[in-house]
Image 1 (cartoon, helix red, strand yellow):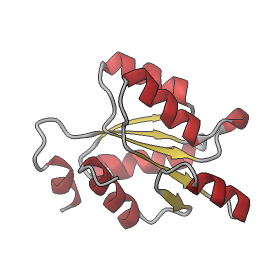
Image 2 (tube, rainbow, N blue to C red):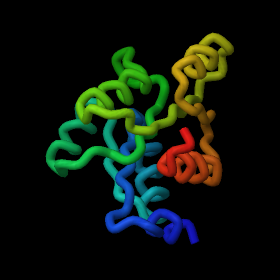
Image 3 (tube, rainbow, N blue to C red):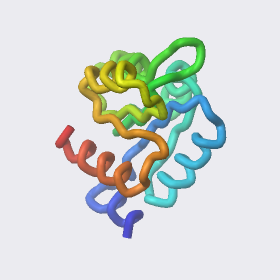
Image 4 (tube, helix red, strand yellow):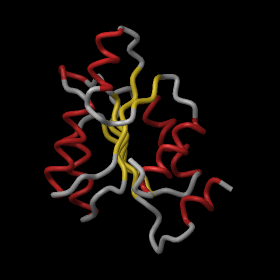
Length: 136
C-alpha cells in the first residue's frame, strides 16, 4: 500500500533527497523510500546532493536532512542550499539523534518539522506525504 501512495496521482514518482553522513543510515533510507515507490538521491552533504540533482536535471520534491552533519554543517544549511539552487521552497524535514534541550530547541526554531532518531518509518512516511501535499 505504501508504494501506491507514492505513485498515486504522479506521472513521475516524487524525488526524495536524503542528506545523511552515516552510510548505513543513508542506505536504510534508500531502501525505505524506494520500497515506498519514490525516486531517491542520497548524499553525505549538500554539495554532493546538488551535484547528483544537476545530473538528473531535476529539483527534489522533498528533502530529509540529518540536523548534525560532518564538518560542522547542519541539515538546515543543506536544505537552504538546495532551496537556493532551485529557486523555491522545497519542503523538507530535519532528523536528529541529539537529545540536549538546546540542540532540540535550535533545530525546532528552523521551522522545519523535526523527527528524532531512531526514526519511525510510519511517522516519516506520513510527514513526507503531508509535506509533498503542501501541508508543511
